[in-house]
Structures are given as structure tokens and as C-alpha cells.
Picture (cartoon, one colour):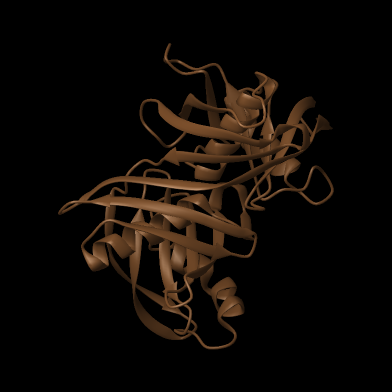
Length: 277
């Protein structure tokens, strides 16, 4: 089958959005094909659909039905670009997104639209639960912060908990950790609080995918939510990741009331791809 697509780079979390219609039952297989190195090559894929809510400009469904902050910002940027946003302008784009209820508002600012450069900020769905979980990682039993959303769960792993081979240890342990996680998509986030640096490893069981992402929107939200609960107050943190910085802002008054993430989104390619039916 032939599909039209746009490829975007939200903090280098390379994202393919399919802009031509694809039936739901084919989306996971098609997305899995498109993100392969031999195809369009990306970390994740989403599909534009017709919105159900009259107040939404577009709808995005990620390939495994999960919520994705970077995917949300990418879809909003694509819509603003296609609708002719000019340099220096901003627009609020209402959209429906898998793994989130209702309509989300994403603010898009055109930095250099001629060259596909934008910033975007979106209010995120709030966590369903912030707690602690016990996981066997690298032969150790670790009690770790765990942040659960509707479509994805993130486990936050202190950067010094596993020693110098932390990334390899996490890769080797990821699916044993996943046995204790209910959501199809889940992440292990190596987090250095002193340096405000994070490195996210994200798995999607149904797609058989495992990726060290260069920037993770929901992982950034999870870290922001964890820190707000830990210190009991509102905060804004700039989280350095391999692909750049994602800013998380948390409003907290006895409980988390709102979380937003903000980052740079670049449009890098648009075209047509081929995938097996």
C-alpha cells in the first residue's frame, strides 16, 4: 500500500505521521513497517484521522493507540504549517489524541516556517497514578518511582543506581520489568536529578519495538510530575535529553492540577512511502 506521510523531529524524537487514511486494524502493522531503518526510519508513527469532536481541527492516533506528547505537538505543527502560519505568528490548535480524553489545545509558534522550524507547547493528560514499584533490574531489587498514564507507564531510574553499564542493564531487563506494567507502552527513564538530564528507553509490546529515544514528551511529563510530588510544589524544569531540551511545567496545589511540555519541532520531510498490506 502507498501512504502519504510527513516526518518531524520534536527534540529529535523522530516521528512519522501518516496523512492519508489507514484503517485502524492496519495502523500498527503499517506504522511498524514505516519506522524501520529500511523504510522512513523513525522512533514512532501516528495516523491522522477525522475528529469526532466538532471543536477539534484534527485527530491523531498513535500506532499502538498510546498517548504521545511529541506526537501531539508534531501533528499540531503540521496542521499549522499546512494552514499557512507565518514567521512570528502563533496559533492554538485543538486536536484529539489517542490515550487522552476530549480535546487538547496545542500552542504552535512559527520560528522559521520556511525552513520547517517551530516551537510547540501542549497541556498533557494528567497521570492516573504516581507511586513506587519494586523491579528486578540487573540482579538488584529496586524500589522506583512509577508514573502511570492512560496509554503508557514510565519508571524513573536514578542515573547512579546501576553503575556505568546502566543502559545495557536496562536493555537486558526491560521486558522482565514490563511484566509488572499493565500498559502496552512503557518507558524506563534514566534520570540525573542534579544535572536535570534524562535518557528514555521506550518499549511498545504490541509492536515489538524498543528504542532509546532522543527526546520523550511523556517521559518528561513523568519526571516533572514525580518532582512536583516529591517536593510538594509547582515547578518548571528544563530536562536535557540526547536530542535537546524539553521543558515541563507543573501546577501543584496539594495535588497536580496541570502539566504542560514545550519543545522545538522541525519538519524534516514530506512524501509518499510504501508498506505491505
